Image (cartoon, rainbow, N blue to C red):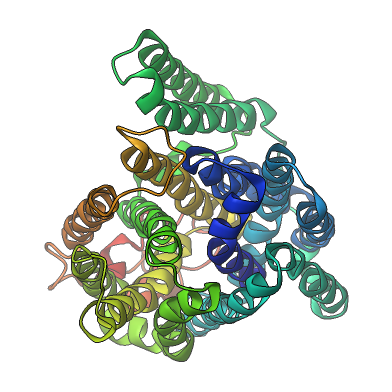
Length: 480
């Protein structure tokens, strides 16, 4: 599923300028082609993860993958911008159920430690391969017609569905106890949709207008209602106690920043290369290819790196590389240097993803009981997708500020938008660094003498299954 998701994201990104031109979309409307998918995905990921735990991971994965294929087909044939955004939203909803089911199948199939780390690094490599292949294919297909970039995931999804029917273990059908929290799902989705809509419309309405302030207050009320609902629900969408663990919180914040800053950067860069520099779709795709190839070639080794150096150190280095990549792109002008800006900047972004993404996945799911792996996976994916939607909305507001949003943004506004990604990356570096404080001498945390222990990431000893909630116990060893 991560291959398919990455394939879709990279293909649509390259096709955005062509979609904008053909359907007559403004810059602010165009971002909803991305945000529609991201919000459907991020808004319902928590419900998708919980559903996978309750109804069976294999069953949920297969059903949602079928919907994903149908929505992909519809998105490729519609002629209206609103219908395209709606199809993208439905597609995102389907992905919200497939992604946590896929990740939780991996984390419940493989035990914590080197074996799971290896499996997660391969999982990441699939995503990087999908992204890299999507860039090349989208460049070629967009030259023929942008619709082909939206239709390409259809046969891939069908092939994945057929393969999943044969290879997914029936053991993935094991279910947790409890019920659905539909109220929580409605509240969190509504709050995210309203937040993104408010940020996108704020330049037009005015940041200090009654409409903008009223909408932000409504977002705060919805989020507060969500927290209250989760505290009172017998079977909450999010067991808030899982957020007591520092490494889980840092992992989720890290993915908010990684995905949020990069989705926004990609949106800016696509318009810079194609609309301002007038590069071809294929040329634009090839500019992004170094980052994707670097991740694809190194991801399978990241599990070994995590075992040797600890996820915390890898995330810190990845965050520094992310900031460095954005800093290089602050030099954008009308005659960019491939050797001096584009290639080194993209390579640094590739290093950032290669180190950070698998490490964040490991941190976010280690120390969590099997019956909550869907929740942990959904929470992590939600962080990435919602972060992408919100930061993209902010960057779109920066791009369209002072204009009508219908033309090509200026170099100055693009540079200001990249600053947003850079500031976020620096914040991510600071957050990641807090995980290393006091960890250099941290020892493994043994359980009581009568409890068997297993070895987790970086040598942290954790209680064997059945010893209670484990996310608090592994904290000492994860960041070393």
